[in-house]
Length: 330
Image (cartoon, rainbow, N blue to C red; front, side):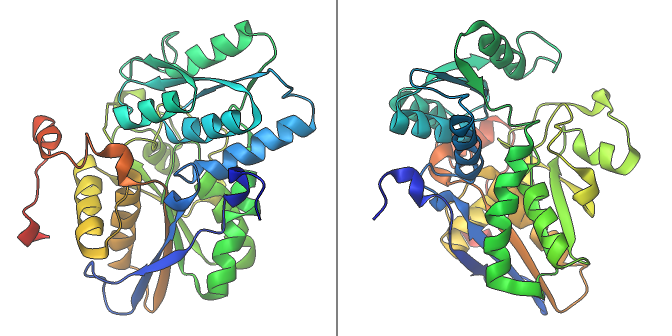
């Protein structure tokens, strides 16, 4: 019997998607990472990094955990802090849903909301604010999830092996969106070692820098613009994003991600967040061109319960210019 909730992290189930018009000869499977106890795939990385910090004496009784987050990493940190008696200070962009913000507060975390629209070099950027708080706070520890190699290692040691245990060498492609790069690169590296010819495809929102950097080798700041899907893409290069692991980077837009969320809920009974919609959209796009027969695997990082006031709210969608679909059209 588990001694605490964090021992339930990982070993999430996998389901096949069958009702989304998938081409003949292609099978698409999704690993349900929203069933982790903290509600997202970020539980894995946070647990791995913080346990390591404890073992090295970087986290001690009374320590403060500081991190920048789009919400899911923060939820995992808040859960860890509540379980083991630490204090958490979390910075986040103002586009993060109220559901996520309130969940962090409920678990005792202190949150600092920063403007989304500022450039990455701004002192008001949520990453800069977290680093400043860490520097000014005695006995604090910062995960530094964007640049910490333990982020990808968590998925190399857990998520990747779990996927391989289910499918073996039958996987044709692993598809996922990313921000830090921890999931796509950790899983991708493990699977490539087992299946050298597997495709590892990153999905990147329009407004992020990764797509252009992968295809042209340059960061074009003129391409940076706001987008609404949370927890994916980035306005700066994360050191965890190992482009050598990637086979391709495909762009998606908010509308595609959100409409796919609606389809997942109404056709597959899977109530997921925007990054899950993006991931499944990417699988469906790849399914059109991938040599058949093929097996495509992705992850569903978090639940739709965190976005009830946004992507599952018709008024919010209409206000931000997103078309809503009639149930009969899905």
